[in-house]
Length: 120
Ligand SMILES: [Zn+2]
Image (cartoon, rainbow, N blue to C red; front, side, top):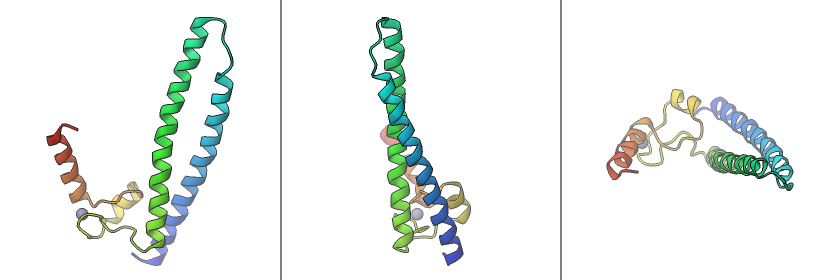
């Protein structure tokens, strides 16, 4: 991949990571608020639902953060944009749509078909 494109993806991913980390801080602040005690059970249930909703978001954010970190590492190691399975270049179109991907479209389709067969 040419250095200009690599720079583009590195900037993009670094910004994305910064934003996610900032959002993560906000989620933690929100959770501290919901740990107050609620005399009304209905209020408490709402607060607990909010907390589990936030935990799900945090879990998703956490996974995305780790994917972005790995993608940045692949840029540094000169492995970015190369399919993990077959070693072919991943198309630019696919990388722009999903910069954290590690599979080319053929391997991705195959993986999804295998998962479907296994019932995952
Ligand atoms: Zn592949």
